[in-house]
Length: 281
Image (cartoon, rainbow, N blue to C red; front, side, top):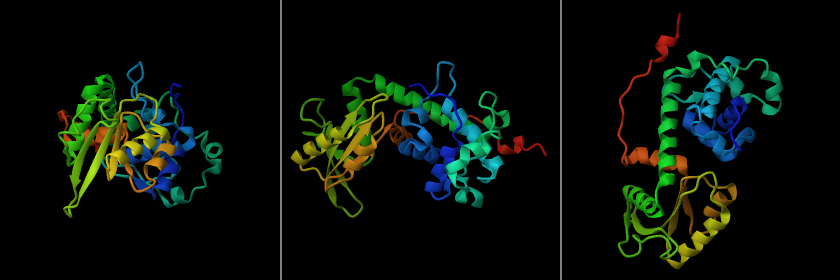
């Protein structure tokens, strides 16, 4: 179902309260998506641009940050800094939140230009755009190229791939890679790797269960499951049970790792106006 523009301030405040009252914009969105706060799904939060090249959720998110500041629930947002709740925001009972603030929120049809052009929001939109483009490109990869990309990423993370069992194509043995990771204390672990290119479909519990079974046959100490999509709550629960745990990397974490290790991306230098220019007095 296509995302419909809506108010998301309650979901942001729910995330902030659960995160202890302070978090980056990206962490807030991630927490909303993972917990489906106020009915928002993962695919709503990370929907990307629509047919008009707009990013609906990001526009709603930006307007909601401004609303929360004007309601007194968060401190004044500043470029490059975490969103921080006030005492009121930390103590707010969210049971009657909608009826209390419906008439005070900003219009979603005409959001304040000042909000949308702040340095922090401009950077936020840029980050969301290139990450969405990355995931779209990964979805176009052939299975072999996506597995190759995943192994490249895993190797950058410090896993040494097994040349016999770690570099084979799909269907050979039920996993997409196998290798070894040496920790700082020189302890080496056996790592199994699984990769899935999914669009909106999440990875479910049976897929994690199946992967764990294959891990056992390889005597792996733990596994890494990579997807362009996300994981159901049941899949996450299954991944952390037992002795052979699975590290889950969803689409957004995948993009963050591509950025961290600079995998075939180029930084582009640009400028956005600092908040100074939007403080008119």
